[in-house]
Image (spheres, rainbow, N blue to C red):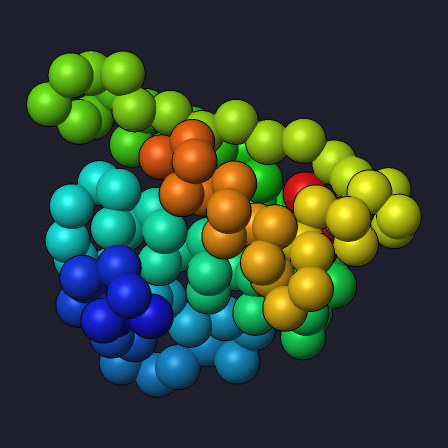
Length: 114
């Protein structure tokens, strides 16, 4: 993920130094675009292992870094897919998702059905 999005990522402990068993904080350093791409890819993996996690933090994720790029136009949009729509939008081995990214210049990542 770090290489793909040109970021530096590591887990960090905050406070007493004891790891909270419910979650760990992940620090992601890099450009606004790189951080968001890496964050969404990590969230996709987390959502696979902990279904429903993304829904609890969705609003924080979508509003994070809004307008914080050089043009002050950075933002994140999302939509929810039905099973058949998600399968079509992913394509074989993620091919359709990758084509959508290349043609639009946008970051396209599926986190659960979002």
